[in-house]
Image 1 (cartoon, one colour):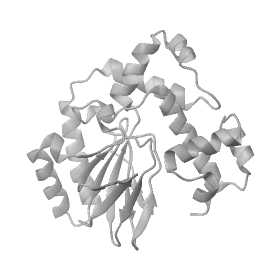
Image 2 (spheres, rainbow, N blue to C red; image 1 turned 90 degrees about the vertical axis):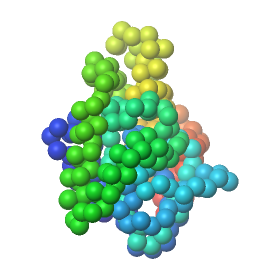
Image 3 (cartoon, one colour; image 1 turned 180 degrees about the vertical axis):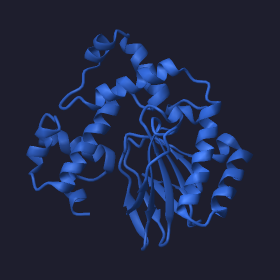
Length: 258
């Protein structure tokens, strides 16, 4: 369950959506939904989490870079497990890591494999703090240091931000030809920008964004599936169910009952 939400300082606000904590008071097998963003997940309870994809299972590292999930995934969480999660803006996660964002797609990467001793020192400082607010101060200091060291193109960053906003504002359908014509760049160049900076191609980014809109309606509205499918731009109810299940392994009605 989502516990508390915190917002970033002014220097990080253009690049970080929010920080939030997730605590579980019982053992639970939780379905993971694609968020459309790369996340940094920090276990601040030192409880083991096991993630399952198909027949494969893995122990989640204490400092985890969590890329876009585009395949059904679940996490086995133990009672008392608490995570502090940084959700980056869709266009901005690459500013904080040397890797292209696509390296993290459908992967759980140990931050220590990226930054080695720097990650260990960061985690030790964070875990020494007693309050959540103090932990977030340490987290923000780490992120600001990564941002200062960033060598990536500001021009490309702003372009990718505009491209992401354009795709997110498409209500019913997405056409990369229209995106290419609107910004005057080739489809191939736009595809490469998305893969490097966002981690998934623009078609998949639109699909995940549409999935999240349908999930929000499913949870908050009494509307039938046919109405939700139409409102979110799916061809029909069958198309909606097929795409929804491709991300969760469950039908919309099964998720609604969770």
